[in-house]
Image (cartoon, rainbow, N blue to C red; front, side):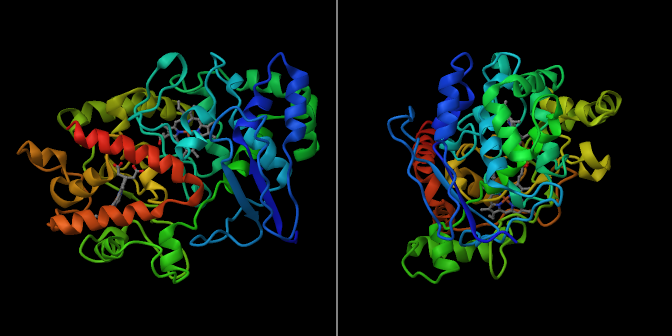
Length: 432
Ligand code: HEC
Ligand code: HEC
């Protein structure tokens, strides 16, 4: 067993400069060389090189502990047997994640939609924007703590981070490559990448495959784990005063009257805030309500391969709404989406798979009263809606408290992102 390897992945901005060097290859190599990796028994935190970092948030840091102690409030990350996490893979993965050359326009990288300074989302966009300003159908979930998920995407259509990472490159509304060859051309010929793949996998040139790319990206994502929020300090470390009295009351609502914990689960020792299951809250169902048979029929005709499913659900707003059905092909799964984690939720507005709820308070009000948007219109409730979902009838005080509780789930690394998102939310609720 490797002992207490601690990695500080530092300065996303410096990495970005390294990865996107393009013609300035020499500079890119220098930048890459400057990205250091700490191996020590202590939780070494390295400071970003301020001179080099162009972005104000360059100091964003992840101190990810590989095979060491996970952050407070989180369990250890498990890794696939054929892709053990190493410092070299993580470093390579972060650079790949930030490389916009892997898109048809050379402008879109994974980080475009999963921006570290926005808690790995593209808020406040409701749905993501890929190449040429094309919009998808769904809100970008955060990549933070995706290492713990038992399936990826809102409908869980990919089982692993490795499998997930190959899709966005090819999706026409995301990075829009015809196939993975252009990526391989770059990573096989770019000198800086040559050294990085050699270090990470012991391969170089023509021996580099898309699976190496996927594994490195997944390894990077597995260290983007973030706990240690005020809630964690209060709940798991017994630090009185880490959260406000209102938030403490809000936690009680979360556990009891609000029944939130039945899906956004927490355990004795840690809290992932997701049951990794799929439920239908009625969000977005109005988009296919009148037309379900036709939409489902059309989907079954055009979406035979995994890649076709990916294109169908992100390319057509109605098809997006079939949810888990896209994977299971079971009628009762229409409109079911994955329970999202609530960690760093204050930083990732807007909310839900279609980004239709702008603020945390709106989400709580949704659970409290509307549940199905159809009920607003005095129409029949969504026939596919999950059992157990009904209006909660919380008091205004409970709504405030529950919202305050949700705001305590921000990890220290994402406080700036939360501040920005909460400012957006204040504005969005003011302009209603
Ligand atoms: C154009 C914006 C865009 C780009 C580019 C993009 N993503 Fe995403 N990402 C999304 C959206 C939207 C979803 C949700 C799609 C769905 O569920 O159908 C998503 C989902 C994910 C998830 C699943 C998270 C979860 O909670 O289920 C992961 C992991 C992820 N993306 C990683 C990546 C990686 C790695 C790349 C680059 C190879 C990438 N993304 C590129 C927008 C984007
Ligand atoms: C029956 C299971 C269930 C219960 C109970 C539940 N949720 Fe959810 N929650 C979900 C699912 C599923 C989604 C994603 C729904 C979608 O997009 O269609 C979600 C989404 C959310 C989101 C938005 C996540 C994001 O990243 O966009 C928030 C915030 C949230 N829930 C908070 C709560 C709160 C607060 C409660 C209690 C009042 C609660 N939930 C009760 C299943 C549940």
